[in-house]
Amino acid sequence: MEVPVKFSNSKIIGVCLIVSASVLTASSSFADTETVTACVKKSNGATRIISGKMKCAKNERQVSWTSTSDSLIGPAGATGAAGATGATGPAGAVGATGATGEQGPQGIQGPAGATGPTGPAGANGISKTLIKSGNQVSINQGSEAVVLSATVPAGKYVMDLSASLNYSNGNTSMVGHPQLGCFLTEGANYSEASTNSSLNYWPEVNGTTPFRTSFASQSANIDEIMRRSYSAKSILELASAKTIKVICRHYSEVINDSNEQVIIRYPRLILTAVDEIVTLN
Image 1 (cartoon, rainbow, N blue to C red):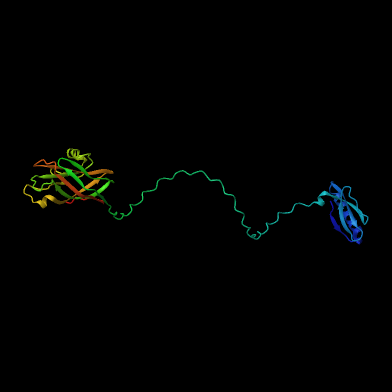
Image 2: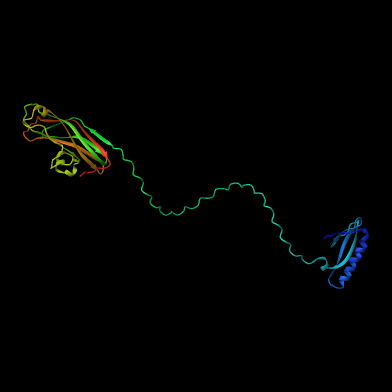
């Protein structure tokens, strides 16, 4: 280890003597002593402590003195006061965006939310009208025919059935009393409709279907016998889609005439869909 110590040339001998005197004085008081060796630069008196096998340079002279170990190392100084907090450094640059992490596990289902308030009433729906028209049908006395057939969606309807009716037997002097009766039904034929009212959508009144007419009495004039228009109205309510038919039968209460015909022209069924049906008192 080197410890530079600077002395002037004129004072080197004096320093050595003073140090030596101090060492001698100290040696009389302390048992542990050691020899200190130093190299003194000849030109400017700069001094460095050497140890071990270290040697002085040619431009230096070697000096030695003895000293106690305690004279070289002083006691530890008191802890110094904490320094002031340094100024805050500038903010660092924004780091690069990190890689997207893995998706976490699905969370547990939350509780059901409270029922929301009832919304305002919607606007009235648009009415829908279904129209079914049929062809001309001729029915001989004692026979029946399907005048109209239609598949109707579920719903509530106001129904209107109309037709133009004609009678013919090739004999304008006839005295018969022809009759025509019709059902609005799911039944397969007139007989089934007349015996099973649960199949019918045209309610009977006093056991008689509303669409029933007599063309003429024995005293009727020829114009009444030949032409007649007829219409019937009712309510139709279907819980599911149904195929319904208008089935008519021609018969006579007075005479049997195989030449008698009732001709049904321009049959038409009109169904108007409604939201609600209210029966008034």
